[in-house]
Structure formats: C-alpha cells, structure tokens
Image (cartoon, rainbow, N blue to C red; front, side, top):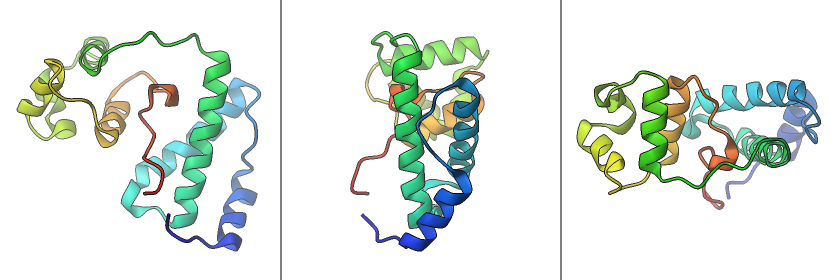
Length: 143
C-alpha cells in the first residue's frame, strides 16, 4: 500500500466526518462523497483519498448489509442483462464501458466477468445504485 500523510488523511476525515451510518440520510451523504472520489478516477486519487475511499466503501457496505434485503446470487451475465433491460440499453450502448461489443458479448454469454472499472461505468449509466455488497466498488487490498 502506498504511504499516506497522517495529517493529510486527518484533514480529510475532519472534512468528511465519516462514522457508522445509522440512517438513509447519512448514507446518502457518505455516498455522495464516495461518488465524488469515484468520479476522480482510481489513478487520480491521492493516497489519503484512496484510504478514505476504502473507509467509505466499508461503511456503506456495513450499512447495506444491515438494511438491504439479501441480494440474490446471480451471474455477471444476468446482472448485466438486468441493468441493460431496466435502463433501456443495448449492447452498442455498452461499448464505452466494455471497450468493444465483443467484450459485452463475452460477459452476456458468461465467458468473462465484470471488472471494477466496468462496474463503475455501469453505475454511471444506470438509474440503479450498484451497492457495495455487489462488490462493484471494491479494489483488491494492497493496490
């Protein structure tokens, strides 16, 4: 993990005031901060912002685990089909997210999964919130 400045991280914490999420209003506040960090892009986050991103993801995941009904087990193909159907999207609409129609087809035919960056792209075009328990906003530890 990249070194971070404790004082810089402390300033971010003081500014955002993250804590255990108790209600939807607090969830929405934390989610807005999280989304703003996501919009910056993973490669553009400072080490302090990266650490805050992980903390906010953990807080949101914890709240979701206690308040949302359990998400049924599904495949990436079924999840993508559902999001496309609910948002009136076609394969051609997915090219910017997946790189080309071949990659979209591979996901839809169960030949490959959905990457974190693709999940973030889907979140941007979807009218649905992709929750952290869907493991879309997770990065591998140690990155």
